[in-house]
Image 1 (cartoon, rainbow, N blue to C red):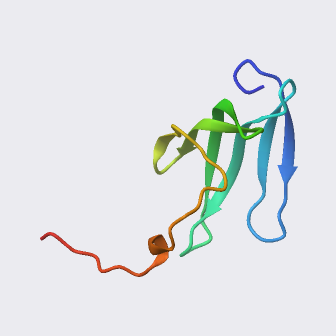
Image 2 (image 1 turned 30 degrees about the vertical axis):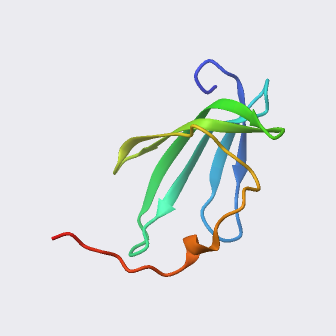
Length: 105
C-alpha cells in the first residue's frame, strides 16, 4: 500500500544506473511512489531516496503528477509543485546560447 491505496510493486534493473522500484496504483495504474538509490559521483556511497507522486491531471491526453515529494537522508523532504505543463511548445534558440554571468559582490 501507498497510503490507503493498494499498489503493485514493479522492480526495474537498468543496464546502466541503479535499480529502483515503482509502486503502481491497482485502480488507476498511475505511479504513486518510487524507491531507489543515488550513487555519489566521488565514491561508491549509495544514498536511498523515495518520491511520492500525487495531484494527477490530464494534459493533452496524458495523466501527469503535478505534485511530488522527494525524501532523502541528506535533504529531508523536497516538494515540487507544477502550476502548468505544456507539450510541444516552441523554445527560443537564444535560451541555449552562451551568456556572460554577472556577479554582485
